[in-house]
Each structure stands twice: as structure tokens, then as C-alpha cells.
Length: 378
Ligand SMILES: [Zn+2]
Image (cartoon, rainbow, N blue to C red; front, side, top):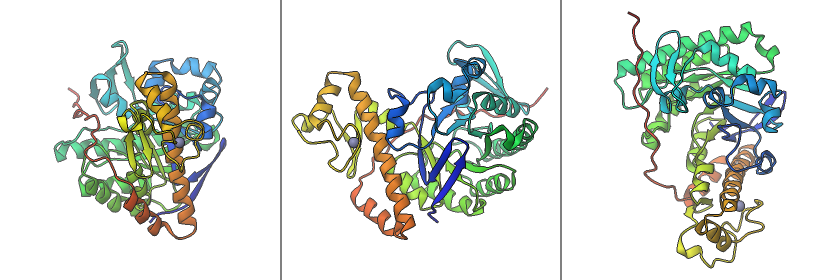
């Protein structure tokens, strides 16, 4: 099911499959936007929840929008903030109208509705907007998953209505719907059909890679992806390990985002064609060759593994920056390899070559979300 595509936005074309670096707070941590661009990134992500709280949509609008504010001229996808409301904010309460919560910064009460989230993203000048969804921590009871999934579908309809009322495509932004359904096959299928039928530009898959075994994520993708329209991009949210990218492309996914490559980089974990290494390990102390001999990034072409090792041991800021550049370039090159292989009809053999060489990290954990069910109105 691997496929090669092209997404045209008013700020440039995205060749897919593509990985999108995450710039949660309108910055890809430690990097200048030009550095991000030179790693081969075609589009970056920003987060509605964080930017709404600080610096606020009014300030960003005053600055001329998010692109001008952060000096990134390529496309920007903004996440709706649904995931952050349920993972970061305190006292989240879900009602049919929307979700109220206390800011993780200062405890102030906020409300997000499907309509307000569209308004915020239009205010940022986002190229690709995401609907507000009800994200549930797992494991949860089937009834709770069904309730959250159905609410997400109703919220999608409201987001579409709000988007169309605000100009629709004339706003120069497009809206994506998000599939939920937990790890329940029936609910995944139902949710995929709901998103497939909605008047949206793209279909996102949410609620996966939240700690479930890899075969379960694969099963959910295999069940739901074939139900999505062929001509719309499919975006698997929050997935970014090299092995997950390859295996999800094989299941028909076009777009990915994840904080993992930059977060791992800041912890001294660097990708190589053989797997992830820890640069602080003593074996790199006197390795006077690049971390990855095959890498063409601005770090590997200038600095040795021994220098990286020294920077991390000395806790120098440059180490965090160089490692971030390397990991983003590594993933961008994986995607380039994937695109070339699809074009030449050799994806299957390229995937098996990757699997034979790359040793994945096992047992990696991700922050667990709480189960926050909807309240019924008194
Ligand atoms: Zn490199």
C-alpha cells in the first residue's frame, strides 16, 4: 500500500511520504528555521494548545501570522491541541460543547470547542488545520472509547461547518479530520468511515503509538487505511521512530510527526543506519570519524563522534543543536529513500534491507494519557 504523493499548499509542495519536525512552541527546539529547512524538512508542526496559552493568538495575528512570527516560509500544520489538553492540562472536563481545562502554565481556566479551535488555527495562518478530538488514555472501557470516538466524529462535523463558515478553502487553510477508535477493530473501522465521508482535505489517524504493541498498531492501520479516500493524504499522528515510519508507509500512510527525533537528540541519542546510539557512551570518546559515515548533514560533514561526545559530556548547547540537525536529517533521508524506492517500484526490497540492518529500540515508553470521559449535563 506504499504510495508516492504530492500535497500542494499555497506555501509550497510537500512530497510524500513525509516526516514533519515538531515545533510545538513555534520553534523546533534549539534550531533556527533555516537549519530545519536545510535538513530537508518540507513542512513543520506547531501546537494550538501551547500557542493559544502563550503568546496567544492575538499577538501572533498582530505579528502577521505564525509564518512571519517564527520566520518559517514553508507550510505549517497545526495540531488542534486535543492531545495536549488531555495530557498536559489539569482538570480537563469534557462536555458536548467542548473541553474546559486549567492551563499547565498558570492554572487559568480555558475552553476549547471545535469551532474555537478552527478560529485559532485560522488566526495563526496555519496551512493545514486539525479538528478538535476527544483523546482518551488507554486502556479504557469499550463504552468510554466508543463515546469519545463518536464525540470526535460529531466535533468533526462542527469543525467542518465552522471552517466553511469562515471561508473554507478561500481561507488558504485546509482542515483534516482525525480517526480515533482506540485498539477496538470495530470502532477503528467506524471512525475511519466517518472521517472518510467528511468534507475534509486529509485524514489523520490518532490514538496510535500510545504504548500498544507494534502488531496492534499495524492491525489498526491495516483495518482502517483501506477505507480512507485514495486521493486524500493520510497522516499518522505522533509516530516517528525510523522502523514505524517504514512499516506505516507500507500500510499506506503519507505523513508523520513526532517529537522523538529532536527529544532523543537532546538526550544524546542519535540515529544511525544500524540503530540508535548513545553518544555519551565511552566507545565514542576517541572516535575521530563521523557518528554516521553515510550522513550528509551539517553536523556529520564537519564534526566527529569524539567531538559530539565531548560536547554532551561538557553539557555544551552546541551538542543539542548538532544532534537535532543530525536526527532530523536522518529521518528526512529515510523519507527520501522511501520515496525513491516507491517511484522505482522497489519499496518492498528497500523495506527488507532496512529491517535487516536497523535495530529498533524495544520497550520505548510514551507518557500515558488519563482516561477523561465526558460529563453528562445535569
Ligand atoms: Zn548527520
